[in-house]
Length: 77
Image 1 (spheres, one colour):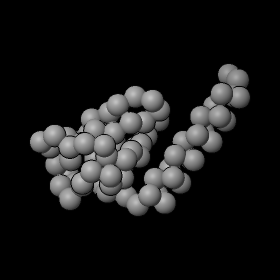
Image 2 (cartoon, rainbow, N blue to C red):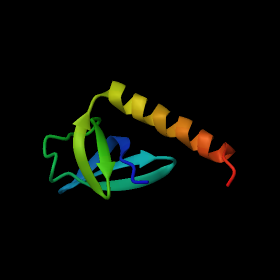
Image 3 (cartoon, one colour):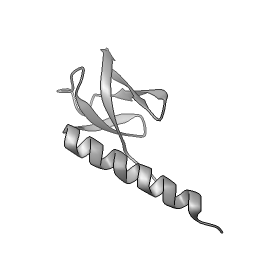
């Protein structure tokens, strides 16, 4: 399954925004979302910021990811 993850931008260097997700730092190309600034929330997939999102959307996405990770941990194949 492909998943886009939210992150709060900590810094920007050239065309890249840096943010933390799941205790790791990620880098996202912001060419598709040039309006992104430090402290904005972004939705990142495959190394690219797809869009700037609201904090509410970010929190909803994070909760969705957490819930589905917990469900996957309890599934047996």
